[in-house]
Image 1 (cartoon, rainbow, N blue to C red):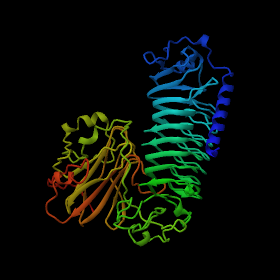
Image 2 (tube, rainbow, N blue to C red; image 1 turned 60 degrees about the vertical axis):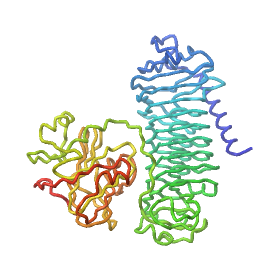
Image 3 (spheres, one colour; image 1 turned 90 degrees about the vertical axis):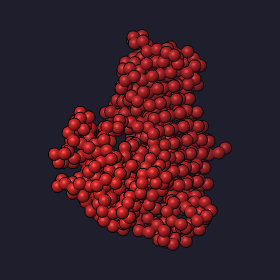
Length: 567
């Protein structure tokens, strides 16, 4: 018997035995003391979760739901609970609509998952939507479990947020999954040995799409998928946690899995994989169009590390998955991305012969085809796109808190920013949950341009960064971003032609000294500065990039507050 299938069957049996045993434990609230009217659990009359008591009622009274049917639940408020929720009878399926609300697991040690089945034929088919799992007190997750469910088959989890740490072999959402789909979801807790940020160890035939995790990744663990998993497909996803003996996306795999449009940005130490756990590389696994950004300055790089990112670049046809050099690859091989100056030098400039045993060490940091923008927006971001930090009285608004009520009345005070500002050429973009796609802008030299990013609920540590044509990075001063305000950067005048890159980041890792590239709430502008007198028209630029910015060549009126920075 296939070892992985055997492990899965054993794991499932152990889970069922654990769940069955738990059904004989006393519940916090008995059915006789449950007085709330919560619904019948049908699609037309779902069980309403609007309070802590309603959760207790479901825990004690799910016997009211007819056996063999689907139990429908709908949450209408933030709630908390101190135990698992038992599903009695022979409920076939559980459909939970979270409505964007949260459930806080309060002070529970060795938690085994929010929903468990008290039946010899347990519920394994779950449909969860728009739910946030939080933890409070001394709450910990049991080994080989999941914060939402410990085992799931043929299930879908969409727009799920999990904040708790993930224990050994466990998953942020699902402990063990078989034919599970996870989309638009993320976890923020640290990931224990062999665990997975979203999907735990020993999972099979499952898919993760447009999701991410931010927690640190331990030995054999994966940023999204736990160890010993097989036939897992991960697309358009990323992780940012530091990696210590695990894999940025996949844990230590035992069978065929694949991925595309993946990105990891955490530092790497030990026997670590940027995308895959290192010892997974002898498996027939294909990962394409993916990027691992290792900030591993203390450990140092070697050719063993170069085997930790597996990329199938395909037969040589004059192009490559990174889209930068005309000809880097002569055949398919493994590669690791390092930090040096020239990614297009022969052999990538990093040594190696290009074989599996001695792979090229491809160097450089440069743009890739990014995952699609995550359309799940968890906040309002539409107010600040008509704001310019300059009043006609020359009041400097940079670094000042601007209440939302003030923003709505700025036009009466001479705030004149929009796409057609008469003061300075301007560009604006909303910081989305997953900012990734470059915006291409053509501009003549000695013509100031100002970048303004904003939103209703953003963070105060936002920064702006500039990369000049020689590869140097500058931390732009004069940026503020706090709740109910916007991010402002001083106007910049480019005095030399060339290719410049502006990165505006809501939450850069400044403590680690990292320069953000792609990732959570980043906006990127690629500027082509030339010597022509006329700027290329917006219609011409629109043919080059999607959602191109409109820039009108109005004259810049200098003032003593916003003197342009020059590069």
